[in-house]
Image (cartoon, rainbow, N blue to C red; front, side, top):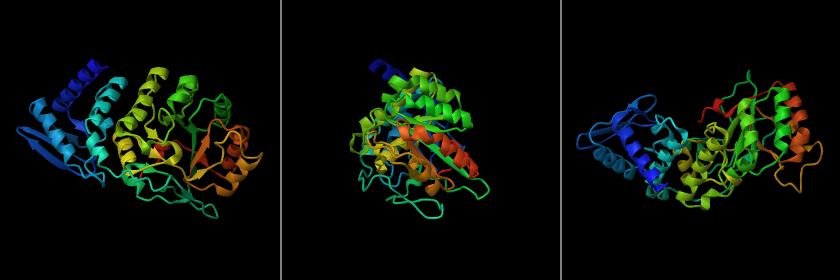
Length: 342
């Protein structure tokens, strides 16, 4: 692995020295070192590099050391930085090395978790509010589609797959019968036993997204651990399924900080919370018959991001009724890449 990392680092230096690389930074900044010029541009403009690889590396190190520690400006989406690396595993390793070289920067970010994710239910099917203690959209995160219109009623059905469950097959059967697409967040633990379900998800047009390796609170983990918890799933998913994972991320327990969301964003992911959830996660205390449907009848709202769990017997038993009801109310079910953050 050490030799592979060295080879990949050399590849990344080559790419930075010889390719035009699109970057997603919001503002334009320019750094120079000798004959090297690195321009980070917004939108579809490109980064142009000239000069030796040593000079380029020095420039990037200087740029990283001058980032603003709290407002998130000046960051690079490493996934875009290495988008020209065609092999998915090599790309992940390039991203890993780039981010691990920047641990000091991530450690400088605010890591105070004032609360886990909380949403505010409202009456008359209004959109849920939130108790977010900083503006999560500035960190490429969302909990609801705020841009929906009255003439397009849409919800986003998401299933957290933290633990293996054979209930997934029946859930997929029901979704297929209704021609509904959903968004699944999977852990490595889930993939180890249920990768065949993930292949089916991709084949049937669903999104399969990242939910960490071990399903633990990442706000108390080291920067190195967080990077591994994200990127190890991405690598393993490709190795097990032959598909690339969809770049949406859900933090276990809903815990979040500026540091965590910054790391997730720089790894190339959008963080997704929720505006409507069910008490379906305790296998020994499932909702009573009819309660899942009743919750949808009371709480549905346009643009909702709905959190469900794949191992819930209540969800499995009532999903068909829920989909039938929501369809009768004129809703369609969409994939998360429709949402515009902000």
